[in-house]
View 1 (cartoon, rainbow, N blue to C red):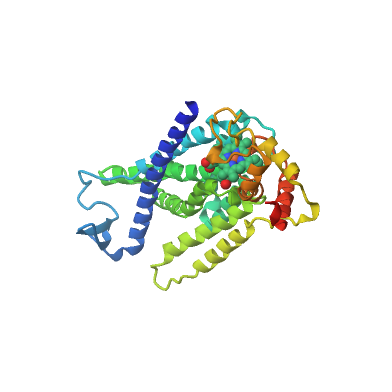
View 2 (tube, rainbow, N blue to C red):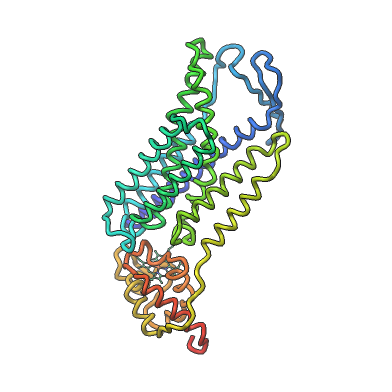
Length: 395
Ligand code: HEC
């Protein structure tokens, strides 16, 4: 029953997280698009630009003002709960999926022997420390040089990805880098952008003139958020792709994909500027190709060090059998996951390809390496698989 509730908890939270994220990023992309497409006009009555659009059965005429010309309108729409909801549901999801059932997804005994509470402390610590590192960097002299700041933050996240992979499972390492970057985006909204808007609104309502630095600072943070989106979204979906987080140099795969994401975002941001070209798409394509190339699985070893079916089956029985059996011994399992029962040598032969894929190519099994499969055992399965392929009559 607990496993069932956990399943539904994670499903409903994931659904909510996804919806809130779509609403948040969607609004952010929309306003960015708006800003890039406004027809600029000489300021008249406070208006600095406008734009016509047609959508959903009507025409929209959007106008931009530096400040509302006739005092504060009676109703003013803010956009902040999309961001907060995304963060709250994301943190809850992190707890349910990675912390509650800690052993399988959070830890990997083959990379470190730390316990669950240590891993959780490392994970949450990463998120908090990353915000301070970023916030201090933005306020320091580095904050005035966008390229240096971007390079510095990218380096921070890659070092983090490498460090976390020394303590947590590859998948948990990636998800924590994503959570740290996503939390920075939400903290930007909560700590800088919304307070700045509040001051602008207060000034428009006849309050004191706002600090002149506040507008540029909020703009800087919202521009950062815009560039953060694609790398963060990549990190969020990567948990379904063991070839990324499971790679021996997962930090490098992340670096290439994050840079590609930045380049793609940059392309969309400059596309409508006069004289802009599609040049960012070239580095984006090269970086993506490099990422795809780097994450390619090694070719199966040739049958020089052949392993017998018996040896292979002994490994599978030891490391997979607790779950992948007609009668699983593992707590919480009532049947073999995805119907893959590996109870005898004939069954192993039947599932040879998938066993090889999951334990050697992607290393996604055993999940979180709960049963402590060694690299030597993976190599043995690889050698056995190569032998099996070389002698099809044995299949
Ligand atoms: C702790 C229990 C557990 C152990 C141990 C385990 N698995 Fe799994 N396995 C699962 C679960 C749960 C799923 C379903 C995952 C999903 O729904 O994404 C699964 C799915 C699979 C799949 C189908 C998905 C895919 O990636 O093709 C294969 C193949 C597989 N396991 C092979 C193995 C092999 C080989 C081993 C041993 C090296 C192993 N498993 C050890 C729990 C386990």
